[in-house]
Image 1 (cartoon, helix red, strand yellow):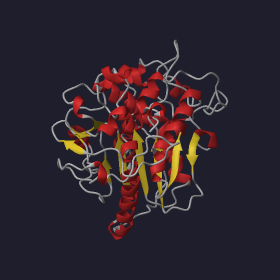
Image 2 (cartoon, helix red, strand yellow):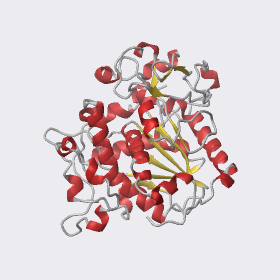
Image 3 (cartoon, helix red, strand yellow):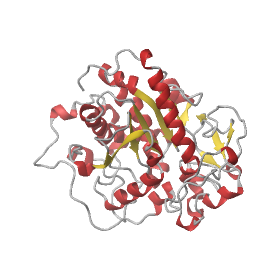
Image 4 (cartoon, helix red, strand yellow):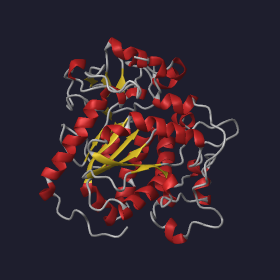
Length: 384
């Protein structure tokens, strides 16, 4: 394997130099202001703009301009004419790295972010290609280094406000114009998953119309971030997955090696849950790499079958532990170890289990269709 070609998901977001130049502007301006009607899409937005969030550099971008998701340039991919019976809406991880003097919140047309999002899309979201039409909106991101050095409360308040902006508008556009009654998956990684969790809590609970949309959700793959006891208690209508074919649930895991035991990892919070991404169980059954359906660590080399990673849950820490020698070259770079620990596999949360994730999405979609009679009112007759 050409490990030197490996593209680390979050490492790229922090270490990738900002690329010069900008693409065509994609947000509203003084000639296309945000109207009161648009601002009222989510009445709770103002409550999310806390005193701390107001201090974050670049936060004013959201008041000054609105992302226009009728503009195809604001979508990394939108397979609106796709032939699959289900959709996935994918939220890419951190890819905004500000240059000196730039704000903590980037622009939606930031060239470095867009290139990074396109690269990581190939190694993550394509796992859903056999079962879903893929939609992936570009969105304004917070600098990962800034975000991961905040307190848990500050970080969550900032992400909730961020998710109430571009991504909420992207979902509105998707449901109004493209969903057409199809079941859907939500998928993310790292900052993308944190935004996904915020959307589940806020966007899908802002009124009865948005709540009705949850009937169509096959699963929410919030991979590479923490789904905690506290979060699940606050959102009791969206349980954590317990098996391979549960639907309407959250699926999540964080991947580490044994050397990370007891070490700080910024994406592993207290009281966190993970599911085994090979056997899809919640106990500490050890699953050898020979059972792994395939790893994708390099787009050029393609899927390695069987996969290179084994899997066993550490029930105390709430993570998936990978102990194979073949996995070790993919540990987080030394420059990132203060944030993630000496043997984090954060950049391979998708890649190590790519084939298993692909198959699991197919199974959960099949399960959703087999239980369609249990979902009266789908698709809902609503107006967003």
